[in-house]
Length: 217
Image (cartoon, rainbow, N blue to C red; front, side):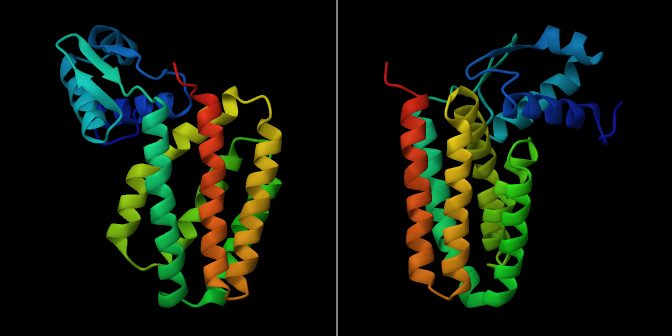
């Protein structure tokens, strides 16, 4: 069962996955004793896992009894979307100047095809992410890629949540795929300014989804 190097790593990955898939809700309390019982471990690996989750931004408060998962409200969601939008725009631009556009376009076409093929299953999110990640990979800047990965996990959590609570999720997936295709075609033609504008609009669309799923109290 334990595949990671340490129990703490295993627990960290399991809790992170539970947050990602919304098996652990926004703002939910994690109780140390319950986690120890669940994983059959002492307090030390649980504490180490929670500390790592805190450092990575999944936990916003640690107490003697446990911890509190980040409360994803509207402001948090909009801020994450804004950061990812800015990073994605710059990654697209960097990839067009530091890599071969035709080579990048071939990878984008592959990811887009896989996203279409997996429209109705969980792999949709994997290929949605990999479409965007292509621009970062071809920016040839590891630290820039690391920055994207740090915030993109929150973007994926939010995307999964908006699809989960939105009754029109099938339509939103179709729209997202269509927007990816427009970005890809403009990029392939070398129309980088147009591709960047389409990327910007792609994230503007996400704003309306966030506002719908996170209504003001």
